Length: 139
Image 1 (tube, rainbow, N blue to C red):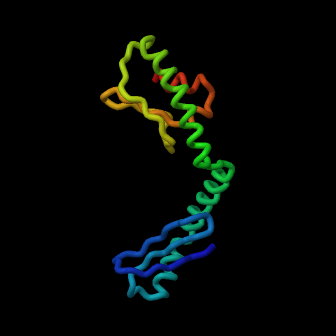
Image 2 (image 1 turned 60 degrees about the vertical axis):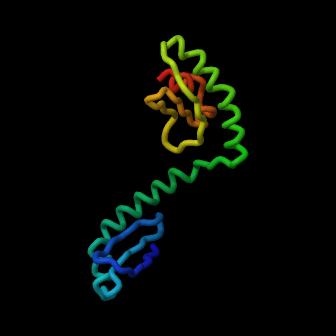
Image 3 (image 1 turned 120 degrees about the vertical axis):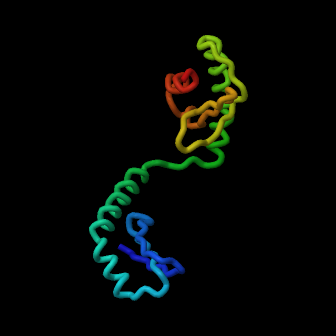
């Protein structure tokens, strides 16, 4: 475990877990080294617990590959052809009007709609089964 101590113009001391093997301790500029060491020792259980959480999170995400710019562009182009057609098909069946359709590379949402009826869709829907795409469109 690597502990980095950063001194700055602050009043309190804090611990930050940067990764599974990096801990940052931020301390007031004038705090004695022994006080910083004491604070670290006192919070060692907390540090160990959060390092373990970071290690687990790192292991879980290591299998996820990020998309290249080319792959993102290809998914956007594919989505621009597929999603509007699905929206056009389902809108009259559900009985709703919609505004603009936007396709994006989003991190946390499959899709969303605004109060004006504008629809936003995630390009990740192009990698999901058609049933998932239809569910998001109808929802």
